[in-house]
Length: 223
Image 1 (cartoon, helix red, strand yellow):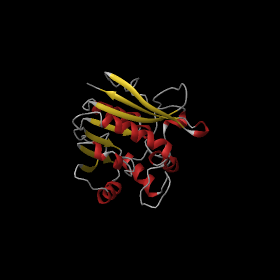
Image 2 (cartoon, rainbow, N blue to C red):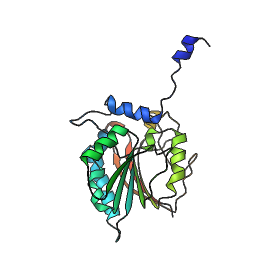
Image 3 (cartoon, one colour):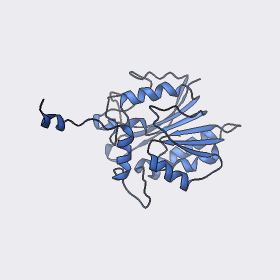
Image 4 (cartoon, one colour):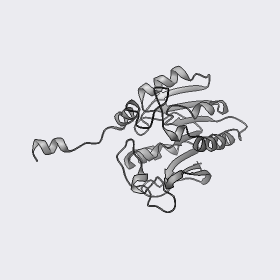
């Protein structure tokens, strides 16, 4: 293989660098702030049922839960859930985004951490939120995260999926895109992930316009 051929091969970017580029180049859109996590974090028809469902779940407990939000993004959604938790731990891989959130969202029971959730140890909590995060990650990274989810009693997972039947868990390179381009989506309960749960409850589904699939939010109890 000559040098020109070698240079032509594009190696996958590390996930952190890929996510930083998403915000730097505003690949998910733009608004008045420096950081924007896309329509999935701002469109009312998507976020309102999510906030309502998660609020209903969190407030159903006599003693508030400790919540860990993995992939908190611009915190447009998380900021509306903090008051319903004993402690709210918001995590994202983008350093500048976490610094921005620390300055702009401050509550006594709120803390932010910059972590790579596939590589780093996760904070302790009762409930973990994973909202349209895994869909951007490779199978190897998802598998690493799944190995850690058993430590949380409750997992609330939101994924963008094709409408109707599809082949789940086709692999991708981590970054801006998701499996919907391959007519696939994440299903943690089947191979290669085989996530073990004792109860599964689908909280709600939002059908997107123009046959762009569905947003599905599911509650899992692991023990």
